[in-house]
View 1 (cartoon, helix red, strand yellow):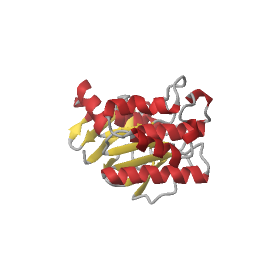
View 2 (cartoon, rainbow, N blue to C red; view 1 turned 90 degrees about the vertical axis):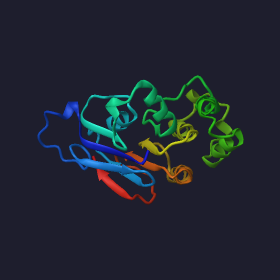
View 3 (cartoon, rainbow, N blue to C red; view 1 turned 90 degrees about the horizontal axis):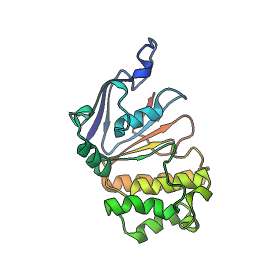
View 4 (cartoon, helix red, strand yellow; view 1 turned 30 degrees about the vertical axis):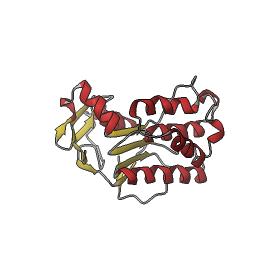
Length: 214
């Protein structure tokens, strides 16, 4: 997949609003593979909804979302499985980790499906993000910032053309944010992938090809 296009897209909840001012909603906007985007948004403007629309978890929007030139509404269940497993990966704002499992087990669940990374490579990522000592700890005993780093590792253990990261560093200090940004961008560059990061204020300090206001 080379491009994701939003064609006159708008959340249904906003259809009665006459004063939509956005670089994305009700616009023709294309996200290109290999480029990095920052989507800045105020609370309640549809930031997480945007990610859910692209990944196909929600369809309560007007307009179209196209993968290359294919309308996402035409995708079958099997198409969505392939897309989520090989073309689009996501780090959810609410993380969606399994609290009763360890940090490593949360990552292994996905890696056992994708067979994308070797165990020693995953352990190196835990070390790079400063949570190597938490690999065998249940996620429920970890801070939210530590859990964000686990969720990032899980997002990276698959092939992808685009990586969506919904407020990925909201609970991280500058040093840990920089470490996660380095790991994420290095893996995206290795795969020639695009990155779409959302933020309501705090965001990774990396070179963005384009900044959009939602």
